[in-house]
Image (cartoon, rainbow, N blue to C red):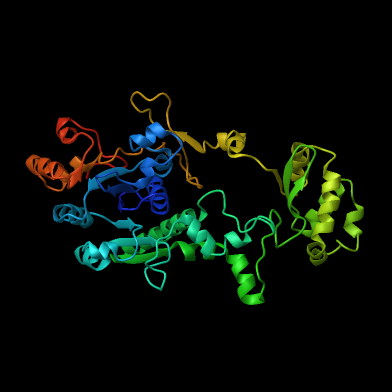
Length: 421
């Protein structure tokens, strides 16, 4: 089966979320993604997630979410022998992805200048909290720190609850998508010119870039963004309203949608009410309009209003929990949740989500997320190390494997996420 990134080899040195999320998308597009992990525990996300037993054996559910379909090679990059193995892998790679603090790779002797001298085609993507330069470059950063510094928390929630963190790590997620887009673009150039690139992705800048409308209104109109809760600052009525059975989002952003809304709820008088007759007046008198709508919407259920409004071309949707939306026919029919191949002895199979895109041909679910060091021996052998060399590297702790030497020489499966080359 042909996928857009078939034949692309990615060395993924990243941890936790932003980098691994990027790598997961590249893997789902066909790239061979090889996680390079510290033999002493690997990716921190291996120990995160709601299932304590899985976390204990370094297969935590947070790790599962964004690492299915990848390989794992466990190397100590602080050792000379580990760096030698890694450099041989770089010679065969198209992309390197890392999310260390700036200059960590340089201190290891593995900075972009060194690696690109060996492999001029290498696309090197570094994800960090604040970018590779500037007075904040060396600061530690987690998603929540960046959400606060970016202004995202200041406009999330309402006047009583702001500043408020989003319910998932949005800065890490946006940075991962930003990195995936930049890497894919650089690969196009690489194929055309043979040239690599250094890509500097900042969580802070990626988050601010995603806040484009808010930032533009401030830069160009002097507007100080304010937290508006569930209301949309660009239009009214557009937000979350009360019905007989629960909350309902309605976005009557266009004039014709507003008129249709008024007719459907039995309030045609609101169309000509001087407080609400124009778009700008509806925004100015948002609270009064919301009160009128909330009163009328109490007469029917959220499900009934949702159907009636959408049928009339007025965007509307209930406020669902994660559990509820995953059971909706819309997602089930599109097979958004995938079941991974069964693990030996597992009580139930693992499930993961597809990326937020579909291609014009279906493709199978990825393989299980890799056990730490699952592919170390195979890669060492592929790179020319003898059985004795491999035993020495494993015994010294330079390389890590799940079973200390038997996997490659006993018969063997193909590496995860890609075919033998």
